[in-house]
Length: 56
Image 1 (spheres, helix red, strand yellow):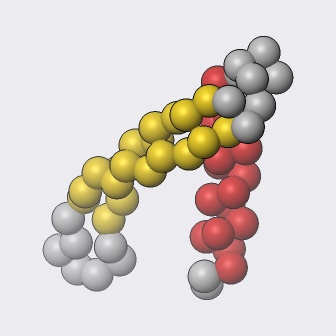
Image 2: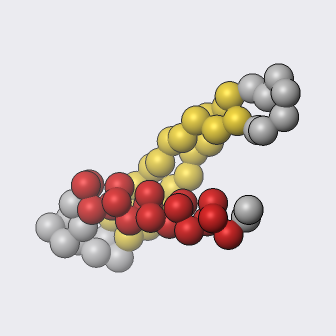
């Protein structure tokens, strides 16, 4: 099992929107040899691609 921390910079769409840092945490049920950092990054990016396309 692994725990990871993800930090992202986000900002709103309105005029004058400011950047802010958002921190998210995840617990992964796979050991490190089955879910390397590069794998985790790919899965997380894929999740946000789906999330962002469904809110439009």
